[in-house]
Length: 128
Image (tube, rainbow, N blue to C red; front, side, top):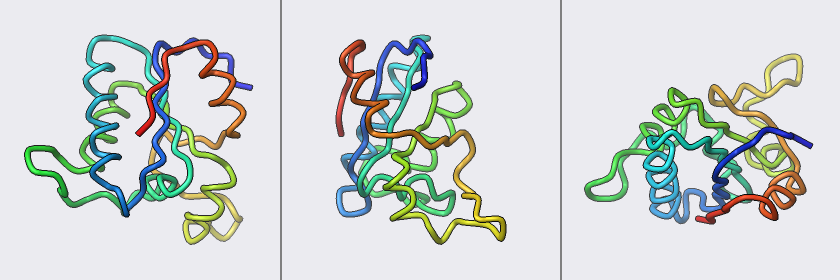
């Protein structure tokens, strides 16, 4: 299990069918990260698709930017992105290279749901 000390964890489960919720979660994560807090964002269920560097390019919510915009800024602010291993396998199998490695958005790492669940017992956790 990852032993990094995070201040806030976000669990994003909203995929393309509820993209506005994912946008709100990432915008909130960015606001908190801008205070200097150490943020980890765990993507599960349909939200695993946001690990695809080709997804989330369009603005879907008035007065908000795209998923891609928020994720790029969060990456620049050293936020940590984790993807549920099973969910990434299910939603992003098309992103494997010829050596069977995933070609995910920069900064993504795979983690088990238990990692996020155990972390949720120790730190503030918001779900979108």
